[in-house]
Image 1 (cartoon, helix red, strand yellow):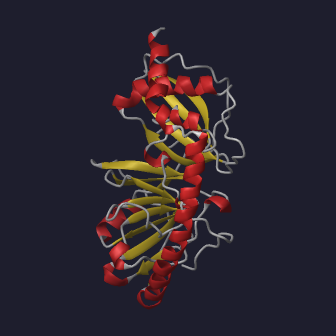
Image 2 (tube, rainbow, N blue to C red):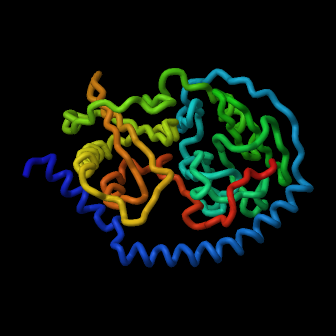
Image 3 (tube, helix red, strand yellow):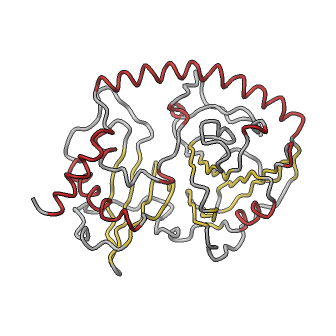
Length: 329
């Protein structure tokens, strides 16, 4: 067994426990259904209370939505991208959620959040029918593509939400720090060509998907995530994860010929990743498909499914009985 094969074997063995058995999968489904019933009742109380508070605390001020010129990336900040826009945020903002603002109830308390209204089908969305959470549950966020009208909205406790349109995408920042809000939004600019990670706004055409010949020489790597052809997020892979990423890419490619989907599973939000492997001035793109219906593939993509590509999806816990309707904001 050569070194590459050993890396693949070690990687799959290391993450094999992540792939549930049929019995564990059934138990998880029953447990999730119980949480959904409980969550709906609890969520209704929170949403109702917040909606009442909003009626008395929110005021709106119209603001320009012209794109601003992006500055050099400051120390302690990183780039986030979505569809056709890129923006700078503090590097401590690393908690991600998929769905509509401002419902960050399932994220870590007091941790700033980056949200994306990805466009998942209604069956994968959750309903958030309030404009702002109660003060005790409110936290700073940057949200891509939500329903807010461009402008400034003032809430109780000194909180302000500002929405601008850059590159055809809405960006909303909620915070009490005016300087921070302006710094984030002023950095936003349309993606022309590729984002800072080398990701194009539209998924590139899939070419021959040969196993990478750079596996032992990769000096850096980027991950581009797409759904329905549009960019969801781009990111850079930490240097200490490059060797494991190379092994997992090879493993995922080898698994493509195996029937991996669980019986009866249908994932309308299946995604495609383009992993860009760099070695000097040479770049090799590798296309990988991902679906929640394939736990074995998930186990072989744990490095790929990190950072902005590991968004919390409240739809996994809450099951709205009706179609998603954007809240009035």
